[in-house]
Length: 425
Image (tube, rainbow, N blue to C red; front, side, top):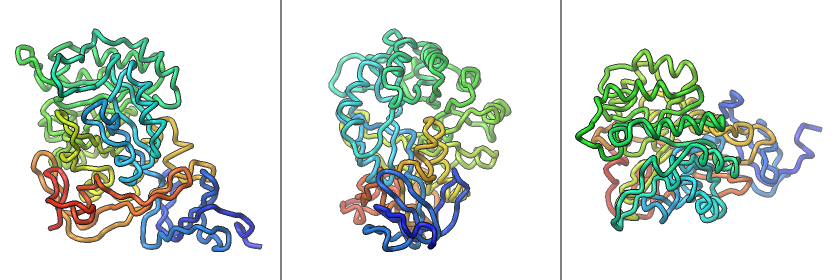
């Protein structure tokens, strides 16, 4: 009797190109699911062993995509998105809320977002008691290192160890001009207390005290002095002069050494991605460790119409810039799972891992991607999710936020693609 003949599966994803970088797999195969676990990956699982089959022939089947940088504390942060629209309905099975909240507000994120979303939602805590809550109804800013301490960050993480997987801080001109390196030092101490990674925002973000504006060239050396192996430098392809590359034609020796030691680079697309910077970094031999979207809404009103980027769109841009498909999938599945310390559970199709799967259609046609700086990139293919399996349950994404890989008509909307999205050519 052939192997798998007597095994029952609740779901089979049939006949796709299975790419599982964690196991070095790139082959045509079936994926069998039992309950909420991956049960088998094999060339042919028998039809009679299940009643539910997802036809993935001609498509790519990969571990459920993991978006390391999102903002999904909707309504509490006005720039927060719906977790499932940024997650399963965008082809993503795990999202990380990257620093929307600090210690006081995390229980609310858990109760109203983490515990209710279909998508798995994890968190990196922002520095301080409040976090990155930016209101639009007046009043002074609550952002200050006086409202925060590393011990409280570590204590909150200890209370929710499975959900809080790291810490978010800044290494950029705005916060530095106002408070020196206090936020970066707070984050480094929280990292050292817990052993969890630090995600460092790079590139100018917060309002700069123009009486104390730092020389852009002084920012990254200080950031690299605080970074340790396992930490993540966000927005690695930013066009900001104080960013990871800045105005340099190629990566510095110090940056190369940091990456070689284990410091990770994350794309964190958002409003910080530039094709020109990406080309210079890639030409200099520095690919991202992780690809993430930094999806968020408007900073001044609860409105997501300016969000013209997604994880699958960012992956498609990296393909057009010369990365190979298995590399891109690794950067959006296995590698972020490693950052989160969950690489045996997610980011893989290994038997026994959670049954989170993304099925991608590779659309081969002429498409023009746009970046927030006004740059454009012509591509011949784009990745569009056709199905996700989340903890064993199949879901067809509606793709409302996939403005960079779908036309308005394909999303059931009217109007043109937004400036940072994409369009046919």
